[in-house]
Amino acid sequence: MGAITNWLAGLSGPVVYAVVGALVFLEDAIFVGFVLPGETAAVLGGVLANQGHVTYWGIALVVVFAAIAGDSVGYEIGHHFGDRILGIRPLQRHQERLGAAQEMIRERGAAAVFFGRFIAFFRAVMPALAGISKMPYRRFLLFNALGGITWGIGFTLLGYLAGQAYQRVEKQAGQVVAGVIGGIVLLVVGVWAWRRHRRQG
Image (cartoon, rainbow, N blue to C red; front, side):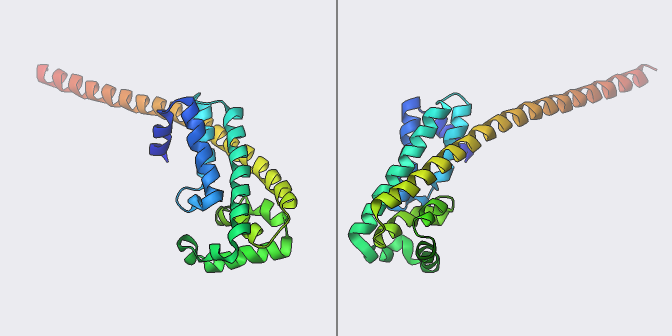
């Protein structure tokens, strides 16, 4: 994650917003979450906000909007193509988990869209499954928006707070390292002075 953070940190603010938003959007729209989970992108956005590359509320708004829009596209894909979606290659190895997600929709209805937002695999497939099940879009959108707002603000805040913690740890670690180096220097100087004293004696 450090390498990705450093790469994003080297981009301009508008590009950071675009990249984070795209990763969150594509997770739900076309299952990109199997490669890089949207929550990782949201957390990284929060870390970069802490570092001053973007604003917290700006990146949170982008993440929330991208999550809701991506879910809506995923819903439309499922609604349009139906069960054929379940046979695509990225999903073929996850039939058992797909069955669990479908069962969740049958038991909880639209609430599954909200709760699924907080589970990585379900977050990627739940919108399409909701479309396949012919869930009314208005009902889907309500729970999708509630989940997207809660999840988006929460995970970007988590990244922001993690960035603060990292900076504190980094500062403390720097002080510890400086202390250790100082101790080693004093030890070396002390040994050198003692040996010189013995030679002169």
